[in-house]
Image 1 (cartoon, rainbow, N blue to C red):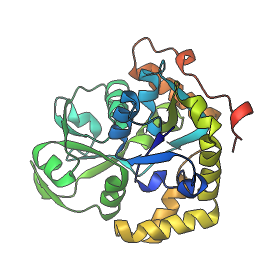
Image 2 (tube, one colour):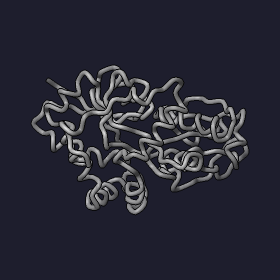
Image 3 (spheres, one colour):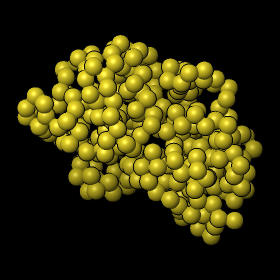
Length: 288
């Protein structure tokens, strides 16, 4: 029985599949790669049965998914890869203005909308576009980008052309904005499996392999290897890549869950935390 796992080729997901493929050699496991929005779509359609998905999608489809405990991408303060670039010197100035939204994400988009409504009490207009910062800011007052593109653009912080001429855009880290508003970490992504295939995944050792791969990827040696590998790919110093990996939170602890619960309650009408089902790690996997 073939099972297909979704993977995202962003630096922040690399610890999860550090040596996952090697651990699953000999199993009838396939891998499908894509951006977070693609993982969201494919898990819902059944094209894949397990993936790191946008946290808000796990809530939207709680009847269909089971969340793996102890695995997440979260941040307490600046995350560096979910950034709003803007010509406005204060987010409150974006009231009624146009913001271009990345087509790669779901949680980050909803986080921006929550912050606009709850923290800044503004109502911008939102337009989904291809994720490309120069073209986004050429036509809009703000641009939300995520992932490796955001990490690179935030690090180089280059001058761009826009409605106000040529210059440096202001940068707002949405996880830091969330911390200022709530005092809590923000959880961007969780690992979720389709409920109808979770037992199959557990039976062939996929969950065990995923936890073990993550543990190895988060060692000092693992982070060093990932940072060195991605530094050349991104054109950034290895130190920036390693510091980024070190600052992220991967274990979905109680405070991460508290931040996630608050976000989902703010973002989704009539959301019930109890609707989220977590896989029983006591009988199937080891908690990191």
